[in-house]
Length: 197
View (cartoon, rainbow, N blue to C red):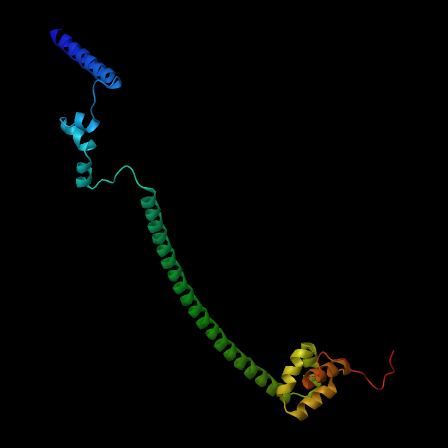
């Protein structure tokens, strides 16, 4: 119990001293600065001593407007540099993708040439088969293919075989095929024997 009284008395004494110091300071009877007052207290002095702050590398609490603006400029420059690096990286990726696209387009063009060559060879082979047939039989089969496909095959045949087959075809289809073969496709053809309508 005696120990408790000692603690209570110690606290009361501390409170009375603080009150006296505050009242004395407010009346001007006591003058002191905070750093001087706490200089003797080791753990508080390190927080209030400006030299201690500089030694530990802490940044000062008050920053001038010029320092703040300088830091903002540095930050913006750093952000700009990061953005420029990202743009450069993306441009390099784009160039690589464009190269890849060009390679693919070249490959497609090469394959298209091979395909066209193969198609032309197939048409030539089919034309040889039709040349071996009779003109009436070939005309009947080619008539079922339509004018566009029939003209491709007839174009690969020798002229006399193609002429015999055209002569054996129905007149309208033979006319359409002839227009395609002659390059008149899409043009209006006027028949001079038929009076305008």
